[in-house]
Length: 64
Image (spheres, rainbow, N blue to C red):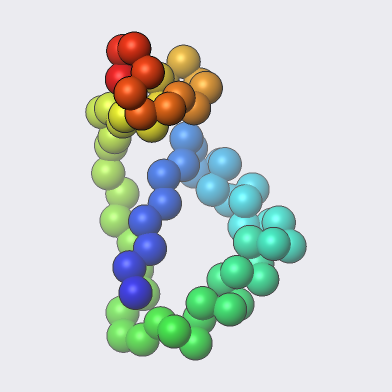
């Protein structure tokens, strides 16, 4: 299993981990994970899913 997440900040990620639905999802996924569980940090320079003004945008909208 490979999980990829995109967060606007480390604070947003930490806040999400306090949500009961997120905690339940993590608990359900743990038995499926084996081996090394770690993470990577990287800088996203663009995405067809966000116009970087803060609002999600549909792929194919002008400017995306």
